[in-house]
Image (cartoon, rainbow, N blue to C red; front, side):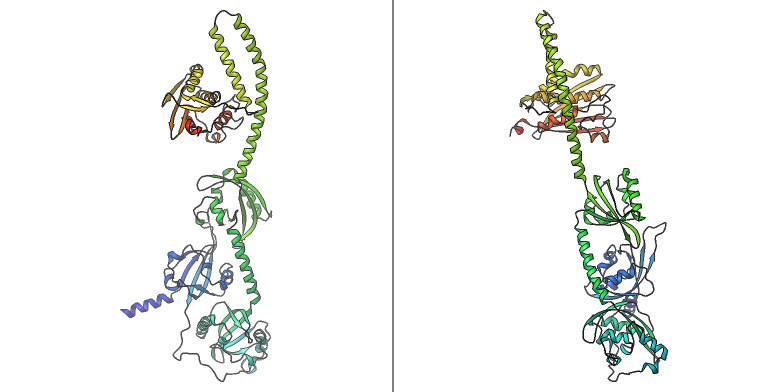
Length: 609
């Protein structure tokens, strides 16, 4: 039973490993024997990137192989096992191109673990004290020998790792003076120690007639100088014995350039990842890359929330056609760069405004767009504040002119009215009411002038309950004419507020008039006041049609109004007065059910502190 178990285990150890990578080089699938070969379970590897495991010196080899449709030869590279050691793997790849059912390219790889060289019973390879020096003119066809000798590509023939034929290009590459310097030499004397196990394995397989993959190695010249080479080898029969034909390409300059490029890439990636702006890549209208700033910008929890997501699912619909047109121009190379402004919805349903710079790039050989997104939400708010400030300036100038124009005839009316009152013998009550209303008009004009020139506000302790009652009485006639009932609910009959009476009275007049106007066919206006958590709250609630959500954002702006004959100045003045009293005004509105204005003032004692 034990022998059967061991046999099954050995079969499993030598079984091929299969995996599927997505376009980003991340594992989407890996066969169940991954733990036996690599030390990692399927769940540990899925979602991770292949390049995280590959030896840094083999990264360019792997990237060039897997991401450039190479199929002719397998690729041999070092992979970091879970225990921290590097093991040798040989892999072949195939590609599944995008179809109508899938928009992503998938890379299917077949991986074979190359076990360390298993020594034969005689322990070490036989060292030949009398190397067989073979004259190529005797063993190789004369024309073929001349051709091999004159080839610019360094190559040699070996038997179990011992060189028995070398061409001139190899002699020059390794710094020899003649072929005698290399013939009979073991390749292990030239190859860096780190590669001995894998080379022994490759030789053993070629001796059995198997083909081996492309590999990069570090060799040493005869003077000890290291050189980087790319090796292609295949099994042959030489002198009626199995042998290895090996071709070399000196890639020292390329490796040096790769290291420089790798460092440059690392600096570039570091720059991208630490950029304050969002840097991303769009391929077929999907995010395929995004830095950490982008994840934060869209309030996402992590990268998977964004990668693969269609960009138009977050982009506000009014910008869809504009962005689509710009991206198409970039992809079709009709433009080198495009700058646009747009708004997006984040995962927390917040609106953000961005400026987007788009430039052409490629993604796995296909046209794509690299974008830089800069959050300009604060700039937008500043522009809105500047616009609002400009409107306030215009409103102030208008208010000053209107107030002066009205005061002139008002002065004449009051003068003649006083003459008539002194000569009249009756109806004194009527005259008193008229004078009271004229005085109130003058006070309102003074408040209007406040927009143009701030005036000194006189604060004093006021009973808010009494003040609200007076406003209710003043507007009762207008409410009755509009079939509106004014209902009041107060927590107590004495609520002290430190305020300017005339200004606060104007606030309640504006809010109650708006509530009455919001119910053209009648209804009920409810006024409530109460104290809570060292604050005073006053609510004005109507049963009107409500305020549309898009209009709620603009409430309080100069000249913005939902009334046909409104000026848009009433609520603006109301906001200003409440702000001067260290208070706040909030609005809740539900279409078809009405609107509630809630004013919050600091309690008298709190305000005094």
